[in-house]
Image (cartoon, rainbow, N blue to C red):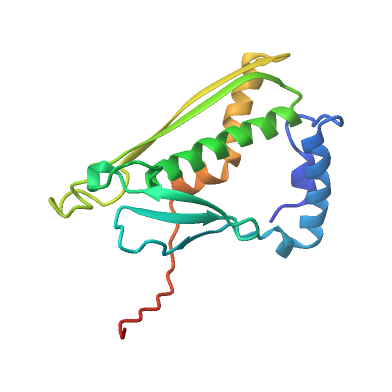
Length: 192
């Protein structure tokens, strides 16, 4: 459990002029006073559209906004790969979360970013998912991040702190790195 004592022992003083720090101070107080308010839920929903097409579907992101976009199946498993596929979305999630975390931390540390670029790649042997070889696991066997951060008003030590802080605080990075259990609730209707 986080305590004020723990939070006050931060190695680097946060800058008062940081908009991120200002917002985080408000949230820190809120979450210390009401830990249950720190729990959030992100979501995505796939709704069956054009069910005769096995290679494309639609996903709506964010429960409030329900921003829809088309998803395709990768050519390595028989699709046309004419739209982003779920692996692309996983990489996009990792890259965007990591880059956003770099932005937040750099603002708190008063590091002026000049350029950022994060490329996430995921590697898989699809023989596992196609059930060609049972010894091949189903799932990405590795992921990699290429990270470029250029900044003013800093030094190598502070940049190392920035990148290590992003690795430590990036939710998607930590989730993928550690893995989490996935629960399911399934309803099947077969009497049509």
